[in-house]
Image (tube, rainbow, N blue to C red; front, side, top):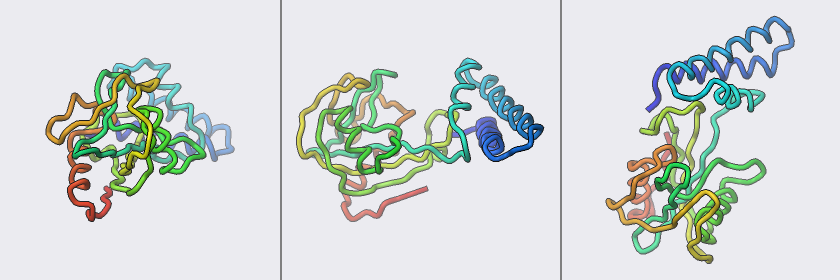
Length: 205
């Protein structure tokens, strides 16, 4: 779950980014630059990240800052859920990732499922929109909303992607080690609730 120091750093970063985008006064711009530097120092003090990496993260965005979107696909087969084995942390997650500019949520999840698992899928139902800060993910520099969409396989075959090293379906209660930056056990449990109850209404934080 989020911690106070991280919330403060995120708020300072957000305010400084908006100020840098919309201010015209040179002295105000200098103050907003200093505020952004303070947010970087807070993260450096409480994490093992290098200063330059944090600066790169915080200076890539411009304009008014809004939450980023992470999308995940819930694909069921014979009562099991599709998961992919991530190379980056050697743990498992639902296929998905950050939403790409120019694609709708439905188009994004179809692309992600194909790239990470090899399956062709179609989206059938929005299940949940969750605030990452309200769930037991590790602290993260940015604020994310997580979108979960149920999909059905219509073709293709299991195949590893550039970022994945295995593809498998898992039973409820028999999940592999999870990549908790991407999904938590409680979130996957929620998705099984939707599988058992097709009439369940989408949830949101």
